[in-house]
Length: 567
Image (cartoon, rainbow, N blue to C red; front, side, top):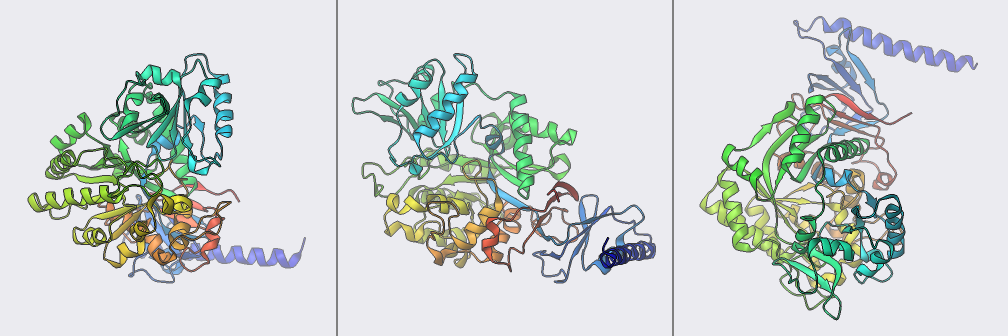
């Protein structure tokens, strides 16, 4: 044994022991204040709170809340004989990262994962493997294909699936969730054939002879989804737990679940009751129906399940997605002049639903990607605010990807929150200008223009549309670069980048604000939730390139370590 190493190690241990012992002795002098349950030690705390000491490296926690933040010698006086010291040095603590737009069950319920496939051949191979494991007649469901990643970017045809699955209905959802590719057996189950007309807000892609190709866009998917067996409670439970574990591994302490069902909420409550689910959820009601009726009658539900579940927001759709040419544009697509996209909710219906929800005290969040859809959403919001006028409605536009430059100013004037996903830019970057043309790009993914105009951005990923990893989102927000081949290093409109602090705030305090939770979360401040993400790097001071390979050190929710990276 190296005696010098042994001596230094023992000495260091003695110093730590003495410091804790000193702190525990001092804790008795705090006028009867009970000792804290846990103290988290890191190399640095980025609190996003100007009142917190810049030299802070410790966080004291009791009953799920932060008691004190500061240098070790000041925080340690809160310790008692039973206080646990969680030493995560040399990690950097930031407020618990929150994904402001996600789909938890969708992430956990992908049976055939097609994310990252680069050809129809890869997809066919994966589907064929699943077919071989399932009895004839069983549904084969998958998600994640993107024709923009193929050498031939034409939309696929059902014949490819019919050859490998003549006896199984197959439904493969596009990466954005706004189109499906189905085989003949699935189309037959849904009653879709050449005589079926396109529904309002939907499109059935067709061959030259009028036969459906199997690709259904936006509202045309509804007949198919009405046929696919609904997820069972057990499947929902397994999906939520699997996705939550992935969230914690990647540093998320909470999400805004953008469109939930009554069954999903019931499973949420059960998992919170049993203590199996730790992830906080700001759950949005998924469109019209009995669940919305219930909350219009009762009003919002805030801080249920020990503060981990809130239901006070309605999620709606105004249009489709850019990748499937369903985003509603004011002028035709540059690469498909025959279409300007789809409005999935008629403007007059959107206006009525927004007014009903706002009048009941609910927040509204509307999916809008194209410039036409965003303008119509802002029109509906402006009318509701003028005629109903709640003081602080915090209305949200989900995605806000392509805006008229003039509507960027309206966002700030109406105090509408832009809930945006930085990795949407880097995923769409290689083909977005071909879809939109150069003129519309000035209002596309325009983070800097929104912030400069006084708007607010809450950031997320839209998983499973994008990967769960919030560090990828931070990297995209700061650099506007892709990380993957063959586009690695490509930068899209660098003048629209966020600063590192703006990016971090978008995933923390701004996400909290978008959920009316800035008084409980979003910063590491005394009295707030003890939700902490510990990173191996400083996301504000360090080279953002380090975000590409950084692995979360620990994730802490309500003071409990729910994930810790193995040494």
